Structure formats: C-alpha cells, structure tokens
Image (cartoon, rainbow, N blue to C red):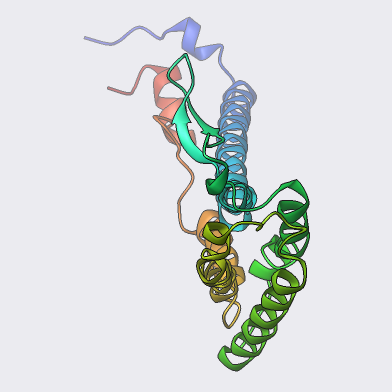
Length: 219
C-alpha cells in the first residue's frame, strides 16, 4: 500500500528548516548568556562578602575601645547584647581622653592596609618592639590625665600593654609573607575558574533533531 504524500510536510522548504534551527540556536545562546550572567553576579557577591570579612577591623577595634573604657557585654531591656559601663568606677580603666589617645594610635596599626601588606617575621618583631615601647611611654607619661588615678587602675597597666600588643601582633601575623593578600587572590581564581556554568535543563539543539521533528520522522 503506497503512502500518500503529506502536503503539509511537502510545503516545508529547506529555508524554513534553517530559519527554525537558527531561531532555536539563538534562544539557546541567550539562555546560556543569562545563566552565566546570573552566576557571575552570585560570585561577585560572594567575593565581596569574603573580602569584607577578610580585611574588616571594625569589630576588633570596637572591642578594644570598650576594653579600654572598662565596659562589659550585657543585655538591654529587649534582651539584645550590648556594651554597658560598670557602676564601680575602679573598673573604668581610662577616661574618654585616655580611650581616644589609645585608639588614635591603635587604629593606625589595626587596619586593612596592615592586613593587605607583606611583612617578614623579622619585620613583625621589629614593629612590635617599637609599638610596645611607645605604648608604655605614652601611659607612663600621661596615666593620671588618661584616668588611671587609683591604685587598682594602675595594676591593670601590664595587662593593658600585653593585650594591646598581642592583638596588634595577630593583625600583623595575617600579613606575614602576604598571607591574606594571597588568600584573596586565590579565592578570586577559584570563583572565576573553579566552577562550571550551570546549564540547568537546557539541551543543545541539533539540526538533525529539529528536521526530524518537523518532518515527523523522529520518535
């Protein structure tokens, strides 16, 4: 039995097939472009958060400032954690002048420029020696003006110096041999090349499959 020709299929020309394939491929390319753009935006956001976390010193400086003022962490009426001033004046190590004087110096060492620098072990030792000497001289020459006007407050002298220099040293340790800068650069490389673009459920469109579907020859 001879199959009757299908006039609907016979009216489809090669140009029609080529046009459909071109439209499908254009749509495919557009979907890939949109997916890659979304992935890039996600990576940029992750990189920004990572970079901020790596070089931010705000929280550390805030803790030091409250440490110098003798404040402690408590809770407000709503149950939120906050800094509170002690009622016992002997626990207020420095007055506002003392706190400001120390923070003016400390903030020049604990900052993003330090973290993103490159220091050798020997250079860190040299810097820490200088900082320790300067802090000791500052407090000894101005302890009463800075608020250390009782015996109990003066007994905190060594712990103030030790705590401050240890925290500054930890900041410089993050810059030893450019460690933090290297980590940031490596994270950028991983984010750019370490993950393949997500294609979702998109299937590459081949000319033969389109032609088969149009002519009713495909499964």
